[in-house]
Image (cartoon, rainbow, N blue to C red; front, top):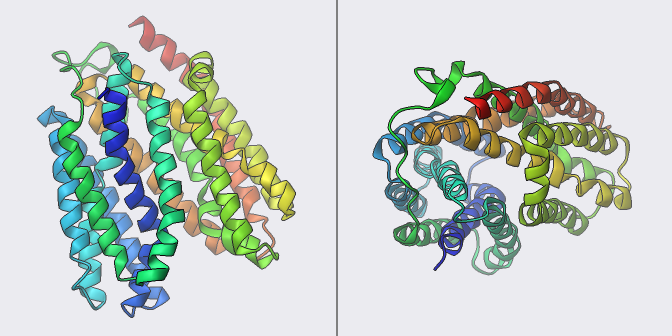
Length: 381
């Protein structure tokens, strides 16, 4: 099998688990007798554990050198953690199991991205198309898991999670290996820590602003749209439409990414963020929202591609896993979580909170020139 097929096959069960976890783990926790507040505590602790664990996995991967081995252990341990939900009852035990799941599974997406970018840099695969397979698996999982949960009850959720991670662990043996990194850092990275390295900080800042601006969308869009008379079926289609737009960009956007470069992608993503969230604040007309949702390919997808390109061009291979995991934590998860909290606190039912997101995402435009300069300097070093 080609590297693309092997990596896509590995990503599919990871994103299936992500889809099941996002949509149905709260239902399982509720079925185990947890209140809404307790479910929030469980999910909140899981987020904190994930953020704390991700850089550690990056450190291990950079020193181990073989990402496939680290990915195997991450997936295998995640499968065991999820199976532990089955006998678990009570808030304390469920907190511990959820924390274990978060820690063990946190390496899978960022380290898969690291491997995919390394292979793409060697000309062995198209990163966008491989990443699109994961997005498609996520969308399929959220659609298919619903009837399964309806048929077997919420108790099937840990089985789906553990099974998905177990399949990923088995497929890790087939993962292609990237070429060994050269000895020592290159260019401007010599002797410099990631969190003081300007290209990395610019990438981190752009992602924090543009991806963080999705916080109100992830936390409130369903509630807001339902309150304004949009049916659950239509809401589900709106969410699916956003993922479809993302997939289309990943599949067909290679030339666009090459032409725009990291700075251009960030500029378009920031401008689209300003437009998308402003319009979302102003209308709940279904036809209008259907048109607006296609901008997800720009606001999420283009900034994701920008960050991946920037990291692949400016971070040496032996530091790539650490950079990816830090970016996943500080550039995406932390700002998105903070904005979800802030949006919830500011929401008054009118949708005006999305204007705050528009302003936040639009600030990414200010970082685009710096990204362009940093990329040019790195190319000359």
